[in-house]
Length: 264
Image (cartoon, rainbow, N blue to C red; front, top):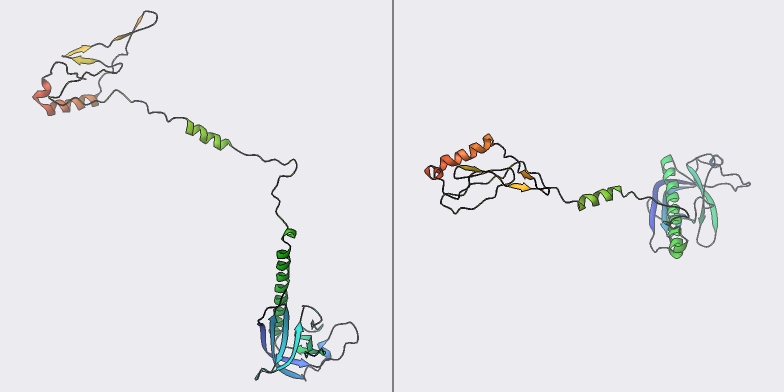
């Protein structure tokens, strides 16, 4: 991954101490108790910056900002930054002068929280570097990324429940049933002075013409016998009230029945 052209600041700590450390004779870790902790060689400000994949630990003067030493860090944890075995506030860093010369010095923080922030800043940066490297590899080789297999395996089947679909189709195909009639036809009489019309009564009704009742026709059957229409239903109180109101409202005109008028 190419380095970006700008430098970002990851962490700034205003108080840090630098110590001379003895050379390590064996492979065991560094111990801060072996340093002269009460006599630091230098004190100032620590600043961690990042440029691309690289992180830089810079030791600067608190007032002027002049650079005292710088430690490039290419990975963490690694040989560029190591923790001591007997304390969480002290570290060993590898500084470089830009001419190829390197040296190991000890640094320490008076506050344990500052040491924790120093450690976390480096961890977060290299975690981000690792993610960027993985994204770059996936972009170069997209076929190597895992794919989601949605195909059917051998012998695998699925089951569809279409019971609800059948019910909906059956309901849509059946016509809506018409409501059954609750009784005879409710017809209003013609207005006075209008033309008369001949009405055919429904089965089971009788016509009154000129004050006399007319019996309905008899329907012949296939065997020659005659079957009368159903007997008329007696008039209800509600029907009598309706025609009574009409008779009262029309006065003398309703009492004179003209020939050809049909009364119910």
